[in-house]
Amino acid sequence: MKAIQFTEYGGPDVLNFIDIERPVIGDQEVLVEVKAIGVNYADTARREGKYVVPTKLPFIPGAEVAGEVVAVGKDVKRLKPGMRVVSLIESGAYAQFVSVHERVLTEIPNGVEYSDAVALPLQGQTAYHILKTMGRLEKGETVLVHAAAGGVGALAVQLAKLFGAGKVIATASTEEKLLHAKNLGADYLVNYTEPGWEEKVREFTGGKGVDIALEMVGGDIFEKTFKCLAPFGRLVIFGRASGEMSTLDAAQLMRRNHSVIGFFLPQIMSQPELYQRSFTELLNFVDSGKLKLTIGGIYRLEEASLVHQLLQGRKTVGKLILTP
Image (cartoon, rainbow, N blue to C red; front, side, top):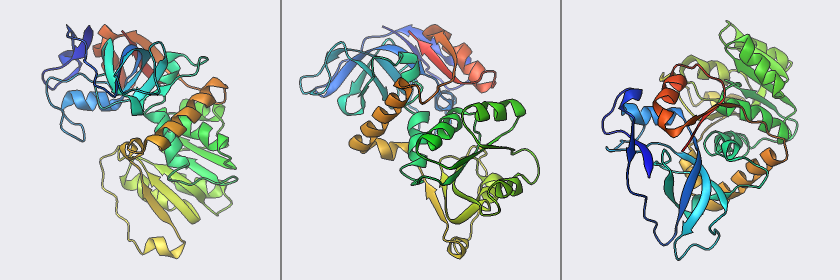
């Protein structure tokens, strides 16, 4: 089969289009013929040797995969050849075939395209769980979504509404991105590059503050976001894109009954029932037209180097996808 592999860390040019043997499946594994592959910043971090866990060489990147089941191990119960499936895996998706454990595969509804399904495993599951599982969103509450035109943000704006949020306040860095967030259902818009943006957030809530804030930048953004919380407000952290440290005196949590909550997706994946239930709900939202996905481009597998350049150059809007 064909696959993309790198044998050294570096720029997009280290990605090689090669021939390798098809994977051999174990008793509880499924062989999937790959139809669509989601491209993420984690893939570029792997390629550069800067991922949060070591990347052993040689390495085939890719964590989001959708395709058709072509063979199953002898102990596989749920899945059969011919079924359409999607999954988040550790690595290996940049290939024509991949072996995946049965427990992390979810069936794709007939009305959902492979390219749409593969846009959900990482960003969709993150948006779902930072709102529902960790943020414990209740109907009528106000939600602050940073980077609302980004992969997680665009889904979080929509899901917050689907889960019953009363108001969604979206932040972004440009007018174009803010307009995109508005089209997705955001009620109020804030440009976070402008001084005093946190005061504008509080104004939109009549001075009360937000019930849930989703934060993944760190540093100054974290500290200003914390100031936006209402009494009993929850700040959910799911990243630290700036690389900057944040400081918080724990006693500050007591004054207004605030909570600061961390989120890490692999912990969700370690609970198959929770993972499957949320993934099925996300796919059904897409199937029914309630959740809109922005696809930034679909490219051939051999164009992986170009796609990495586009992603890191921030030259596209929406999910980038590879197809074998």
